[in-house]
Image (cartoon, rainbow, N blue to C red):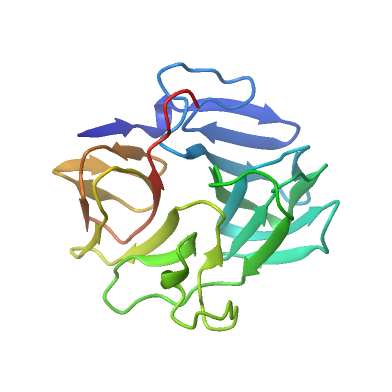
Length: 248
């Protein structure tokens, strides 16, 4: 079953100069029909004007993956050195036992980014952060893994950050990216019992015959394969997480 979230139906939140469109309940935006998708707790599209900062904290027991749609960001926190991330780059912070503060500042020209919050498999532990300046595109326009909690997804099995290896999640989850040329498609296969959530970052696509445009999202339940066709040059992100246990 596929449930579409149109960009115009998303929750809207303002935090200072930051403008957020929220796929799930977040801060002042509360929607009992859209609380989370499996162990994916938050999907926010954030826009910052030049020099503005989007700040959070304190946060604990969540993996926050930030993928830059346009522009450049500097990520900072109370625990780690600043990290610069440009267009198509990824920043990941694993808050583990807790970070008091964190933020993302837009450089000249402003920035837009998508942020995904994953619930880790185990609570506590030592916080950590990683960044990837960018990921090389795949020749076939298929899905590339940006971040993963599965060791087998790193072909080097050594945590090397220079070869485009995925950033490491503490959740049994994946965050994937596909840049699909017009008229072509991308396919992703998972196993039963997973929850998939797709976001269109750029362009237009069809999913099971339904058209999706920039900012649209789709929740995919009870499916083990996701096939996306691009009706214009498109960029999409896809989260694959475990279903949420009852009571959480």
